[in-house]
Length: 405
Image (tube, rainbow, N blue to C red; front, side, top):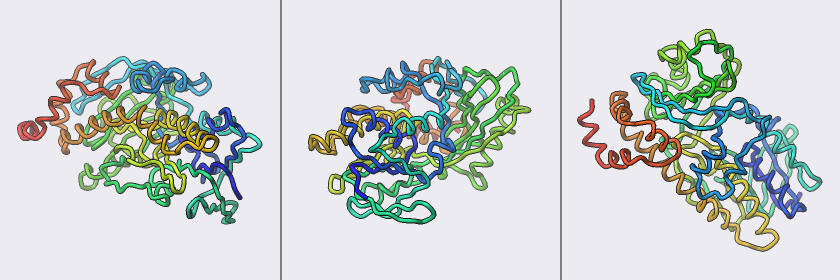
C-alpha cells in the first residue's frame, strides 16, 4: 500500500494534522491515519482545560491567528471559567483573572477526525505501527493482520515514548525529571457551597503533588476533573501517584471539604512530558516528522499539550503540502513551530525548573517563595511570562534554600 502521508496517532496532535490536510487547498493528498484505540480521542487522557482565544494571544504572541484557531464551538465547551487560584502548602489562596473553559475534549477530538473523512483519506482504528524501515511502516490491524505501508511522509503523533521518534532517529534520552505521572477522577455530585464552577484551583504541597500540582477543573455546576501530578525523583519513600491523589481528596483541608459527598464516575492516568521540546523534529532522510507529546511540544510549567498541538498541526499540514507540491524542505515545519512557540516553551521550562529548585521536598520553602507572589505575579506565571521576582530569585536559590528551613 502506498500513500502520500501516514499519520500514526490520532490524539489532538495527529487529528489536527489530519484535519488541516483535509481542509487545505490541495485536497487530493492521499492520507492514511491510524490509532491503536478502537475509538480515538477516548478515553480522554488530559485535564481538558483550554485558555480563551484572548488568553492564548498573550500566551502565544507569535501565533498570528491565535484568536481564530483556539476558538471552540459551544458544543465542545463544558464550563466557562474566569479565574485561576493557586493554593499554597499552608492553605493561602492567590487568585488572578483568567478566561478559559473546560472542553469536551474527546468529542472535539473525535469530530476533528470524522470531519476529515474524504475519498482519499482513510482512518484505521485499532491499528498499531510495529516496525519502520526507511519510509516503509509495518502496521498491525484486525487481530494481528499485517500490512506494509510506503509513505512519502510519516507523521509521528504517537505520544510519550513515540515509536516513530525512535525508529526515525529523532528520539532524545530524557531523565524521569522530564516526565510527570498524573491521575485524575471525574467527579460528580459536588454540592458544597465552597465549590465555584468558574474558578480553576491549582494545589501545591509535597503530600498532594510532589514536583507538580493538584487541580480542580470545573466541568459544570456540580462536576469537575480532580487530579494531581507527581515527578518520580521528588517522591518520598512509600509515596505513589494513587496515594497523592487520595491524600488530596481526603486530607487537604480545602479540597476534602469541597468534595465531601462527591462521587467518582471515571478515573484516568498516564505520563506527561514536561521538558523542553526535542531539538530535532524532522528527519529529512526518511521524511518523518514529530508532533505533540511525541516530541515534547508541551507547556512544561503546567503540562498543557492541546494548544501547541493545534498550532503544530496546522504548521505540519502546511509544510507537508508544500513539500509534496512545491518540493519545499520538510525541515520548514521545525523552523516554523520554533518561530511561533519556542520562546514560550523556554519560558515555561524556566518556571518549571525554578519550581524544582525551590521545592527540594520541603513545603516550607515553597511557602516562603509563594508568600511573596501577588495576583499580578500569578498572572505572569500562567501566561508563561517570568516575573522579575522569579528572575532575581533564580540567581540566589542555593543560599536562600540554606536559610529557609
